[in-house]
Image 1 (tube, rainbow, N blue to C red):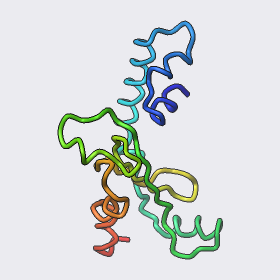
Image 2: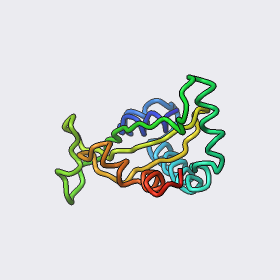
Image 3: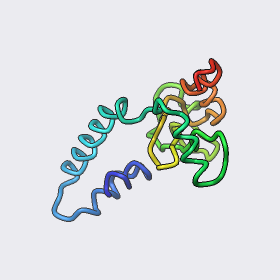
Length: 141
């Protein structure tokens, strides 16, 4: 829970105080280990499945909406002010961030995650530049 809270708020110093009897260094190391582990498995675990009809069926069963493959949303991940291109990372709420975009299926599994753009980038720009958009444009979906 400490790690999730740390990712969400980017306030590691507050997270360290949540776990009694553990040093800040121990908590920071744990956050680092979990982050690296998630990064290592992400390519194999976050993928569009081959059966797009199944994705469409799952959404249709939930909401009676035909042709839906996934739900897409973006969120800002607060970061420390970067040294290079600092203004590009300032989002519309006036703090430094990376803009993450994710697509989930009807069963809440991640199908795609894109974390490549600075906070000033609009959600539609992120999607237009994504691999998923390129697959839609080429007729793969």
